Image 1 (tube, helix red, strand yellow):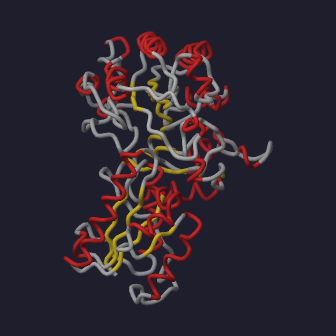
Image 2 (cartoon, helix red, strand yellow):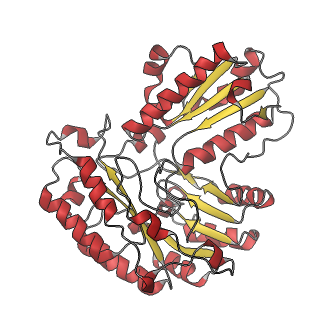
Image 3 (cartoon, one colour):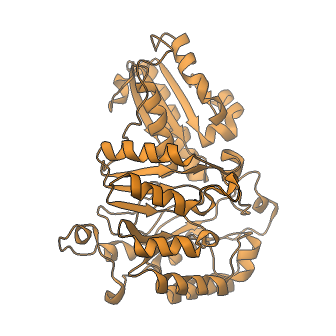
Amino acid sequence: MKLGVISLGCDKATVDSERLVGQLVGHGAVVTPNLPDADVILVNTCGFIDAAKQESIDAMLSAASLKTQGEVKAVVAVGCLVERYKKELQQEIPEVDLFLGFSDLHHLVPQLAERGLIADPVAEHPGVRQFLGDAAHVRYLKISEGCDHTCAFCAIPLMRGKHRSEPLERLVREAQALEAQGAQEINLVAQDLGHYGRDSGLGGPKLPDLLEALLAQTSVPWYRLLYVYSAGLTDRLVELVARSPRIVPYIDMPIQHAADRMLERMRRPERQRTLREKLGWLRGAIPDLAIRTTCLVGFPGETEDDFRELLAFLEEAQFDRLGAFSYSPQEGTRATQYDDDVPDTEARASGGAARGRPIPRRRAPRTWGAWRGRPTTSMASRTWSRAVGPGQEASCGPGSRRARTTISGRSR
């Protein structure tokens, strides 16, 4: 069976796609980059914001159209959008042969076998996670699933469920497999890395334990932490990052806003004072630290004063990387109960991203080449000046794969 893959959304979804494709390869599938030549096309959908939903729907329709134009015999849709709107999608896009939510993925192989697309539902060999990205030396390791936070704007818990940590031993084995495939940098990803191990009780392994195990049992040169809520930045974790040369001094810490009124309305745990204190602590504790953040503008109830307060804080905080997003209402979230929607959110997102101006020389980060001992020129300033629209980023850091304005190159 020739398998075509369309993987949309975040890096966590990329991990899901690579694991699922690995399972199918274990049953004899061969991945092809040429979708019209595929026997089966797998579409991993995203349902995070409206633009992502539309992108997923367009991808499913495009894949289904190949059933009449090429060799494609079946289209399978999985992922967040399917988990959330499976019944509606089945009614609206009958051209797609299988819609499988997260709890249904174990039906994928039997269903393909029923259609004669897989010769034997028993695996020929253990599935090995496949590489689906652009740079084989940079890989992602998803350490947990779901989210326990109750942010008013976010539908992730409705799609992914409650937080569940992956077993430490399994993650170490997966990291070893990624290293064997050539990984030079492994990015740890989750909805909130700081929650790792909370579901295993007081005596269970936490994020520092996982990092120590990865450092001890692999030789991967770099590990990077993506998306850590500020509450999860413990003394032990920060000390480990500060003293470990193989953990990149980079933290992705989303603040979403800086006006206390909006943080409370968004149901975020921090306030401007605590954010300021935490930033000072982190920069004092970890030498040469780079910090990325994201901001959400146009949330219901946001006033011009709130927005100006956010901009003033961004000027003060001088984050090294910044992603600015316009609010997108999501069905089932608390925010949809608010009726005071804010106009011109795209302009606000552009204004927020524009605050990510070129980093002063005194805080310019080391770049990919510098980490490898070669002098290079930082590429950050080429992106900071770009104004962006909703759901896009002004950042050359390793943020969402949905970013449209990022440039080639890597720093921190």
